[in-house]
View (cartoon, helix red, strand yellow):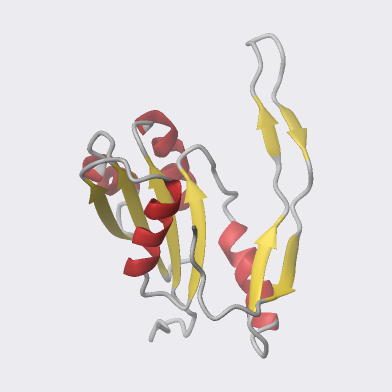
Length: 159
């Protein structure tokens, strides 16, 4: 769904969570820092403690929907529940124990739009931070690079 004001495609970001509100808060804060305005956030709470208040507090001014599972159905079911709610032209996933850089979505969208003549999956390298004890700094591993691969499937689904 294109945004009439900016002409940019809607991106749907699915966040899966279960009983980790402090980690979820960090993940949502990283989403809040995104420069992309045409973004919907779908949070799938997989049978965990309530997160709606945290979601609306962290993502003020963003389109946010929370899907609550009454019981834990697992990571794949949570992903599929999120996919069923997507309205965007592009879909991304972010787990509650991950964060993204402020330009992450814009970087991926630049690559996706450059390859829009053929269906593609766009992904990026990661920068893993290993948290040790307080005396050692986080260890950064990897680089930030966007990749594109031809997508031959008709539907994305986790199993």
